[in-house]
Length: 383
Picture 1 (tube, rainbow, N blue to C red):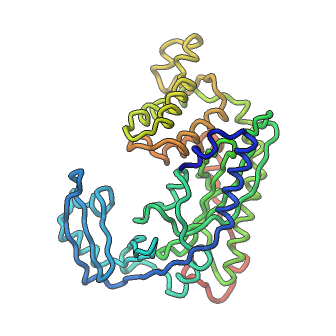
Picture 2: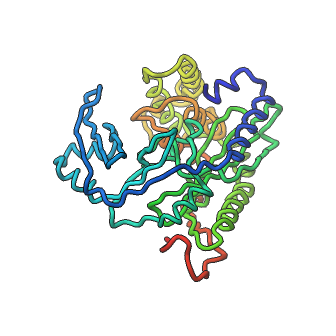
Picture 3: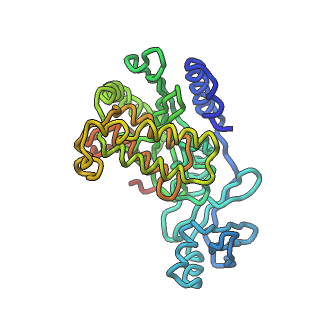
């Protein structure tokens, strides 16, 4: 059952308390440190080409007792569209593969060229012990697996969460209660640890994944790396506290453009066409369609050319505030199913365009390590 289903019949106060409790459970969960195996010599690999039930080409790979199937959407299978099979096999045999135990089975996390960077066994074990491997908790968090082969788990965990209350937005409905969530993500093939930031509106469990550069950093880790993670987490949370209250109140007072709503309508209509929608998702999408339709709500204000010209539409105010549309976009991203033409990433980009002003995307931010002058870097060459 989804989080949206869990809170559907609850009062607003109960919803906020329940979702806040779920965030706390995610934060307090024990680190999962599974068994792992790194294969650095894949010359003995066996590959079998096959076709799935939908007619897509797939590849079955065996490395001794380890195996993986590259599905039709994988970058390996897609490469066969313009590359001979023997060339694909040759490249795979020159790669190194990282497997991790999930639910009693060894599964492929990802692979890279054998000549590329990989952490030492000691470093990998330390990363697993402190950050672990975590099940992806909900639909909002699909970006956590990035481009890895493991789609239902990510390498990392929720590291900190802070309550954020913006009283002017509550208005008795608790719409201004948020949770500010920082996750750290690692890879055996990366020198640095990445941050992933999420702003979660508690009353409706809508999440926005922060794309502004000041929220997302590559953290260099040296000796005393635990302290580096603590400092990085605190820096991000402090940045959030100083920016969000002002920005969300500003969004509450500012109208979004007709052009933004026209673009959003395309996403809603695309998701309505998804045959796998649940009854609840279809009702949600139909309701959103009625609420945002700029022609229905603004047709008596503007001439037809506004709705037929994207450039003109982008200059005209709509009937909804930027905060209204931010909530709707995150609702779509969090609680409806994406399609090829309406991905979660596309909606998250739209949410971030609403939430952050231009300079926030251009700010270059690096988290400096207070231990940068240490003689021996714990993770080798750092970016």
